[in-house]
Image (cartoon, rainbow, N blue to C red; front, side):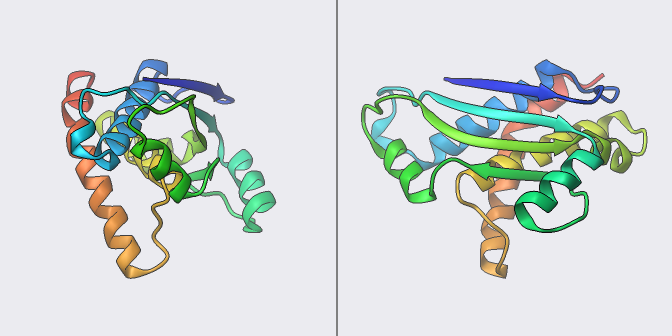
Amino acid sequence: MGNISIRREVPFPPGLNIGYVTGCAHIAVDSCIAHKRPTDFEGLELVTWELSVSLVDDDEIRRINKQFRNINEPTDVLSFPQYEPEEIDEFISSPAPFGKLILGDVVVSLEWIEREGKGDYDVLRRLFAWMMVHGILHLFGYDHESSDDNGKMRGEESRILLEMEDFISVVRG
C-alpha cells in the first residue's frame, strides 16, 4: 500500500497521464518490496510506503543534477533515497512493519522521454516505465557503478518490467 506525491512542472506528452505514472510507480515499488520480503511473511502486514515523483523538463533536471551531483547536463532520471539500503531491508524484513517506509524522490525528465520516444506512443510509454523502475531501484539501493552491480540492476529492471507488461499493454492507446 503506497502513497505517491506527484509534482508535474511540464505537460504530459501524448500517452502519459497521472494514472499511468502512479500505476508504474505502484507496480515497481510493490515488486521491489515483495522480492525483498522473506517468503514466510506472505499474508502478514503490508508494508506502507511513500514516494515523491517530480516530472520536469531538461532544464530543471540539469539544475538538480548540477546541484546534487555536480554534473551540468540534463539526464533521464535522478533518485534521492531517504534511507540506506540496509535500513530499507531491515524495515521490509520486519514481520509487522511499524510506520511508513518513506522511500525518497524520483525525478524524471518528460522532455527526455518525449525526445527519445520520437513520437512513438508505445515507445514513449515503455521508456517512461523503464525510467520509473530505474529510479525506484536506485531508492532500494541498486546501482550500476560496477559491471556486477550493473548486471544486478539490469536483471531487476527486466524482472519488474516483465511484471508490468500487462499494465503497459492494457493501457496502451
